[in-house]
Image (cartoon, rainbow, N blue to C red; front, side):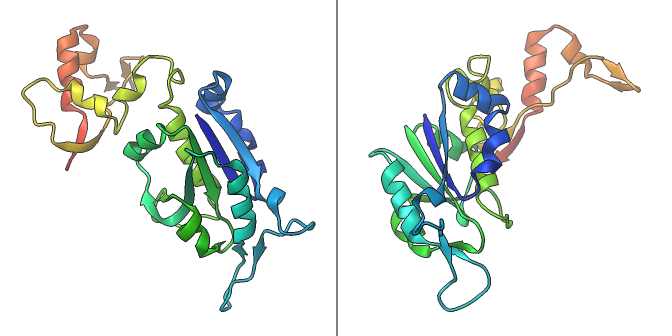
Length: 229
């Protein structure tokens, strides 16, 4: 999978590229991640990519011309263009799985006061938000989305099918013994424990130490948190 990120602060991604699952996904070539400085497509030699808003107001707005030129240069025929915006659809695991099926994603990171509205109306295929709060730019949301998607890509997690039994993943439904009402939208994974079995009087549930896989499965099923549709 190829992901291109358009930003005016590419240096923010430097440590992210060498971190954990992202590093592994790139190493095994499951993910081809490229960070592009929008100033490469600036409107002048000074690297101008923003301007004051029409109608007045505080802050600066990213101009449409450099973004248009960047997309024209980067986007493949089957590429999906995503604008990171607080007005977008709320990102979740279901959306991560959907996006992971595309051959190319282009993430546009806004900054300052915002982006020319024509980018949203005429250039972006979709708008995505990671929550109802304000950030300085789209760089952190881009990292969140990339991290969530990279875990789903084949070969990134060590154990085959591991991403199917994580929180908010459809594989959690398979834990439930039948007959069970599986009419829920998403869920969070069952609690996890490791050694020691007792610490400061706080004990690991006995069933997890029993070696009885059937009872352990039943315990896990009971402790998956569900949200009904």
